[in-house]
Length: 69
Image (cartoon, rainbow, N blue to C red):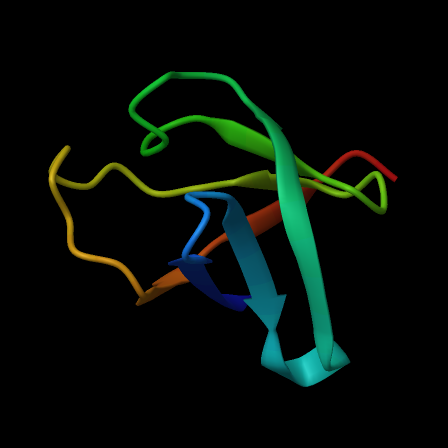
């Protein structure tokens, strides 16, 4: 699924899923560098993000995979 990752002025990461019209803060991430692992959203969703360069500019739209339930 397409997911837009952005960072707000306070530095908090958010994920927006256009097909679901859902925007949630990212509350935890598998790797400190974000890419190539999983992130957990405030609503409980876990998304697997693709491998990307560490300094990828945000906002960016990526193809992510929802894992778990």
